[in-house]
Every structure is written in C-alpha cells, then in structure tokens.
Length: 535
Image 1 (cartoon, rainbow, N blue to C red):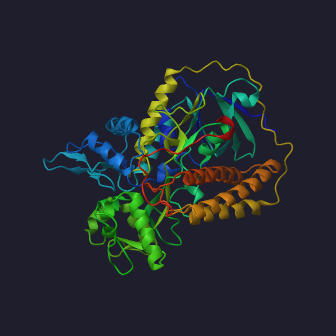
Image 2 (image 1 turned 120 degrees about the horizontal axis):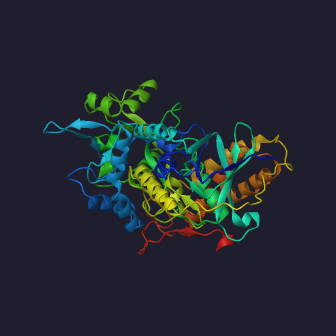
Image 3 (image 1 turned 30 degrees about the vertical axis):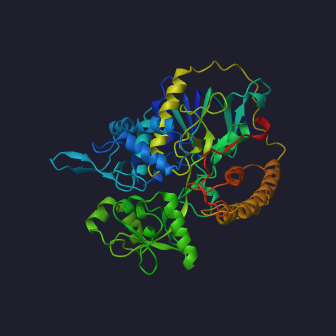
C-alpha cells in the first residue's frame, strides 16, 4: 500500500496544448500539478503538422470561418460554440506570437512581412497559420519553455492517471471531484493527488484503432475516467480518419499534412488517374470525411493497399521550403516527393466526441473540467474541420482557466481518503492476455467500427468488446496494474461507448457512414450517453 500523497490546488492531467495553455493562463497563486505519461511534450500536439485555423487576413472574416465550420460539421455543430471559438482565434494567435512561436512569414506585395497562411480542406480562405510542417512541435516546445519558468507548476513525468476521486467515493455527500490516483511508472506505486480542481486534458482515443496517426499516449484515458466517475459523453461515433498517412512498413502511420493538398497535391490511383472529382466538386479540398471515404472506396474497389498523393508537379523549392519534415522523412524511406507520388492510406486521427462540457470546460461533476480532444464542446459536429483542433485546445483552456480563477480554491477539509490498496493483488504471470486483447480490440474496431459501418458489424464489435471487458476487469482485480493494463482498460470502455453511439445513430452523417442508413435524417441530434448509475 502506497502512502505517497500530494496536495495541490489544481491537478492537470495531460500536457499537450490544452493542458499547458491552461497552466500558463491560470493565476500564479494556484499550486498546479501536471501529470504526463511520458516527456511533457509527448502527445498529439507535438505531432500536429498543419497549423491553427484563425481569422487573420483582411479578405477573411469571422462569419466565413463560422460558415465553413458549420458546413464541415454537417448540421451538428453548436453554432454558439463555433462563434465563441472563432471570435477568439486572432487573440489566441497573438498570444502565441507574444510567447515567441515562430510562425512562417512571407513578403507581401508592398514589401512588408506578413504571416504565410495556407489552405486546407473545408476552408474557403487561406486561414491556417503554421510553422512549416511542424506547427505542433513549435507550439508545444514554446509552451513548455514558458511553463518551465513558472515556480507554481510542478510537472510529474512518467505518471499515468488511474481514476478520479469524488466525494461519494470516500463516504461523503456530493459528487465533487477532489483528486485522482496516479501510477508512478518509475516506482510502480499508485500515489494520491488531492486537489480543489481537476482538469482532464488527456487527448483523444484513436489508439483504439489498428492504424492511427496519433502517438501511443492517445488511449482515451480522460474519457474513460470521467465516464466511470459519472460524466455524460456525446458523439463518440464520430471518429475522424485522416485521409493521408504515409504507407510504409517503417513509417508507423506517419501523417502527411492536409496542407499538401492545400498547395495543389493530387490524389491518384496506382495507374496515375485522379479520382476525387468523381466524389465531390471540391476534389482534394473536400472535408476529411468525404476524402477518407473516397480513398477507402477506391482501395476496396481495386483491392489495393494504398493510393498515392502526388505533389511532384509543383516547384521543388515550394515543396522543400513548406514541407521540410515530410520531405526529409520520405527521403529516409526512399521516396523523393519532388519527383514521385507518396503512397498513402487513411488512419484514425481525431476523436470528435468526448466528455460533455460547457463553454467553460466544466463537466457534470463539480470541480472537474475537460478541455481539448477529450471534451465534447459542440464545436466539431459530425466532422472536425482541419486545424480547428489546436484552436479549440487553447480557446477552451483559457475559458477554463478564467472559470477556475473566478471560483477560489476551497479550503480542503481533512478527509480520510484511503490510499491505493494493492495488498490483495499479485504480480501477473499472464501478460500475454494484455497483448492479445490489445491486438484483438484494435483489429475488430478497425474492421467493424471503421470508415464504413453496418449494424451487423457494430453488433459483432459490441459482443467482442463486452467479452474483453469481462476478461480485463477480472485481470484488473487480481493483478498489479501497469501502464499497458490501464490503457487497455480505458480503451475498452471508450470502444464500447463509440459502438453504443454508432448503434444509436440511424443515419449517415459526416464521419459516421453506415450502409444500413445511407441518408441524412431530417433533424440533426447529438448522441448523448449517461452512465447507468447516474441517469
């Protein structure tokens, strides 16, 4: 039994753009703990290539950005949330520039210097500000540098959150969130974090799929913990598959940014023929759901493992200056994108649903917040528009910080919160169960809950996920926990929630496409799930 206990004012679980922005925006009087599974910058933010969508050009407008987002979301975006987010886009970029984020610039016609804005799918204007093709890395490193200068923030690397602690769990009235248990990966001990506010900034759950563009940390931890604690979740049937990930045995689903298509890259079949114009008049610049389905259709029709993305008809200097990291990665694998097409395949990329929150990031539980990809704000609807994700992270992180600042830290009365008790469990000699179940889960989610679905496939997936849940719950009860076990446990919960949401939606809308219900229903409605014991 571990007796390690920590006392803080705010506990931030996750260290991506959302978590770091919140910590930087909070008042300096808060004592903040930040948990991260790996190094502080290891997460989806770091690997984001494209950029941040924002209204920065005189020819662009807030109303245009709002309209594009609503169109991409296929009727399910919450218009007030979209307006709330877009109106704060320029302010967010100005803040990043003040921090020192080095966005790309160009020389304007009058000789002045201006930001270089690129085009991405679903946008009607060039409004994506970027740092070459490594925007996320530039933002993550800049935020991390500033965070390291704060003496009120303590970062705990190599910690994996286990579960949230609510008042009712320790025998008190109310469901206020008062802390969390977390596994110290260095010691193997589970430690107690007691706080006034808990913020989930844990990212999405794309690791539930066999092929994903996301890092290994994207295992839906925050969504699963919030569900177990009593929070509603919504729209988890909408899983965005990025249309273009590098297809190569050594590439591990390396992302090929949508900005390539914004600069004129074309999707072609193995025989060199373009095909996107057969599916949408916007061709390669159609929203991601349309492009991913088109690629999936052509791969199945031809029986091929990939198609190609070709930008070799563009000037070599444009390719190497705007996409240096992708160019370098391709060269490492023997592909010269300035002279030949890149083999690509869709891969799970973004979780559009999540924990239900309001505009302040507050959840159903007092003192528990969710921001970034783990949350459901209503911004993305049935399909997230390209480069709105980093914007959402930072806009809602600031809103949550302001809400926490406006609600002072409550005096923490002495509570007899029990330490984590592992005296009744043993070390496992059956680790093969975890690896086998992990592989099975990700394969059947890819096969049955992928880009194109049917009720029969979803029902098969539901039966399998229920069996896995029984096996893993038994394992969890009898053996000492590990990072792999915790992630698998969480992914099983989120997979089940995704399947339940998908079975409830009797239509095809945005990222949810089912052969049984190919048409749109007349009235767009969110899919909201409530934990059984809290309904």
